[in-house]
Length: 198
Image (cartoon, rainbow, N blue to C red; front, side, top):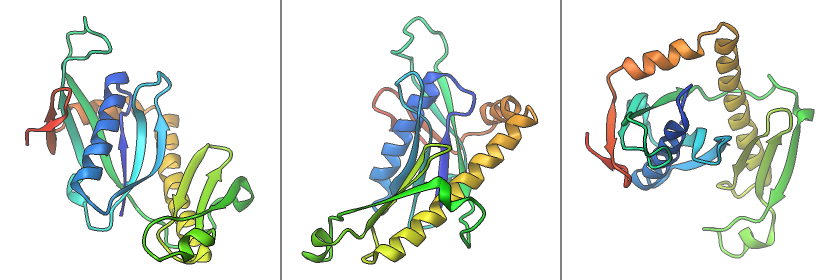
């Protein structure tokens, strides 16, 4: 299952919150991994991040609140920062984007599988050149299987980005962020150490 965590139209503190939430979920769900990151232009945190989970984590979908006095802008009065989490529908087939726009490279894999994984480049990294989205897949022992899985992930991420672009074109991005802020948070974290409250 793929989820996207986004700062929406929020300020840099929301991007810091996205990064902290990603790291918190990596610790909470042992089989989770980050498959794509869109770094904030300021150099602080992630504007958005796509994560993959083995188990069903649809209960994470919604708004996450982080209560924190900003150290980036110490004089800022606001303490509530919001992140949006939504499930990305995984693509069933590859073919809705131009494969020639993707640069595919292979790499050695670590982990289980004995010496074979270090001798053969079974891992695959796919870069979608027009958008800069990068996806890696190393969990399968076959390069072909890793490439197929990476391409499906890429298609899912690009489809989600297109939905975001469509929303922007309709001038709904800010409205969506307003809805995020006003919604009831599914989780609340507090402080610099990002400790979960509820």
